[in-house]
Structure formats: C-alpha cells, structure tokens
Length: 406
Image 1 (cartoon, rainbow, N blue to C red):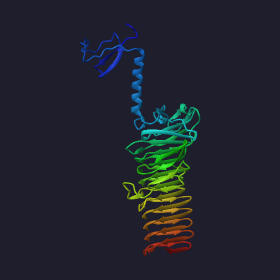
Image 2: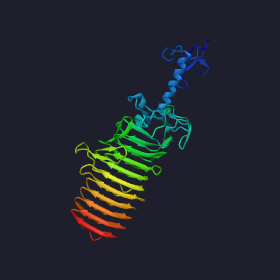
Image 3: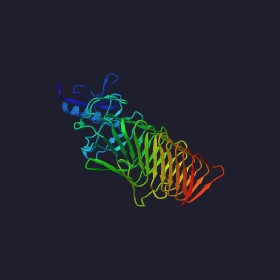
C-alpha cells in the first residue's frame, strides 16, 4: 500500500464516513464481505495535508458548537473580532483584541450569552491563574500592553443572557457590555473588574477612547438569581428602561433610564428631544421581590412623563439615595439612605411605603405629593410640592420638618 493514499468508506456500525487505509474493506456483517455499491461508498485519494485539514475542520466545528453562546461577529473588522477558545476545565475564554492607544479593547459579537460556568476575558500577556478556569495561557494579542477598558459590543436582534460571572484575567479593567437589543441578568456578576457597565446604548468612540453611549432603545432586566456586583467599585446600568425583579448588590450604583446621550464616566446625561418609538410605561420598575442594595445609589429616569415605581427595597447602606424622574414616582416598598435621601419628580410623588433617612430627607414634586405611608429622617425633613396630601395614618417624624409649596 502507498502510505500516502487513503480512502473514505461508510462505516455501517457507526453510521458515518471514515478515513481509512487503502486496504480496508467498506464494511462487514456476520463475517461475510459486503458488496460495495457506488451509493454506499465514496472512494477517493487524500494527501496527508488534506487529512490534517479535515481533522482541523472537524475540531473547529466542535469548538464553535461548544461556545455557541459567545460568537464573534464575522462582519466586523478583523481587529474587532475576539478569539474564543476553551480553558482546561471547559470555561469559555475570550482572547480580547489588541487595545487602542487609549487602552480600549474593542470586541464585537453576533451573540454574547454567558452560561452558569461563566466566561473569562483574557487581559493578560502571560500565563495566569483565574477563579473560574484555573491556569490559562497568555493572550497573544496583548503584546503592546493590556486593556484598561474591555468593550464588548453585541450586534443582535436578541437580548444578551447573562447567567454567570464575567471574569477579567490578568490586569483589572472596566468591562462594558453593550447590546441595543437588551440585556437580561439571572445570576450574573463580574470578577476582577474595577468598573462594570451594562448598557443598551451604542458605544461612542473617538481616537481610540470610549467617550459615551447613545441610548435609543432596549431594556435591562435583573431577574431570578439576581446580580452580584459587590466586588466592583462602580456599577453602571444605562438603558431605555430597567426592570429589577430580583436582588442587585453593588457598591456605587448608578442607574439611568431614557433616551439619552451618556458620557463614559456616567456623570453627564443629555436627554434627547421628545420622540422615539415604543415609549416604556416605567423608566425604572422595581418589583416586590426586587431590590437594589449598595453603599450609594443614584437612580434617574429622564424620559418625558415616564416614571419610577418601587414595590421592593432600594437601600443605600452607607451613603445617599438619590431618585429623580421626569414622570411620577411611586413607592409602595422601602427606600432608605444612611447619609440622606433625595426624591425629586417633574410630576407627582406618591408614597404608601416607607422612606427613611439616617440624615436629611428631601422630597420635591412639581405636582402632588401624596403620603399615606411613613417618611422619617434623623435630621431635617423637607418637602416642596404643588399640593401636599397626607392621610391620617401617614407618618412624618424626626428632626425639623419644613413643608413648602410652589
């Protein structure tokens, strides 16, 4: 037999085509030689290189199947397509793309879904240890240095499903997940990220720097097993609308909802002109089983006439709670801030739950302020509204109370 000649035969026992030596028979049954038919056997000659390419192609199919939840966007420029491999224990590993001179690694996906085993964003030039994947090899695309911002842009009609932790291997970095179709978090969180940003806005870049986000649509939902961002100094949620149906734990939490231009630091918010499609019922909706727990919380709804509803628990445990909305603010749950509470609405404020401040409390409404629950402050309690309605069972107490009207 010529050792460089091979045949492909149909293996009846396995039900598939196999590459075999030239002298192998097409199939056997009960010790009798089976007649080969042209329809049952495909016979050809392959070089050693062809066989190697066939094996490689098969392995690529296996890899793509294994990481079907995280897929690089083949329509994006090559320098924006991340390389997706596997760690030794099977955790998906993303070798992020080479950062810009501004330190931004731009990675574009057609799908970015994270399973319960999590995902690793490889931001290390050298081999390094990870919490989820053990030891991993260095990222060959980081020869010029690691990223300070890992931008993950998703071009899809479907929301991203984050059901596990996103871990940064190597140098800490800000992680941004941007999907205009939406993001759903159910047991998600971040490891070794100094800032975590989830947004439905289009990322804006200038000269290799991330400058902000253009939000036109999309909803971010926290549900099920919730979101654990207790290891990050800063957490940003920026979307057209936000639903909190489970627990969200963070340190410094900022939530901005509406059609806005938001800068990269999440300090400057420019509301777009009135318009747009599919205006949400609520900018931020916290369900009875939902809650936000952080040291400091700033919650903002900017869209005209669109309000904020809380039936759960919003608690700033070491700092201030600030809630502002262009529309009505309704609280039937708990709102608290250890260092102060500020609630302001361009519409009305209705409180049938509890608002508690360890320092000052300020409630400001352009319309009616209706309290049938409890509002307490250890220091000063101040209200300002067009009209003030307080039911008999309502409670205003502690410190100096000032009530004014427009």
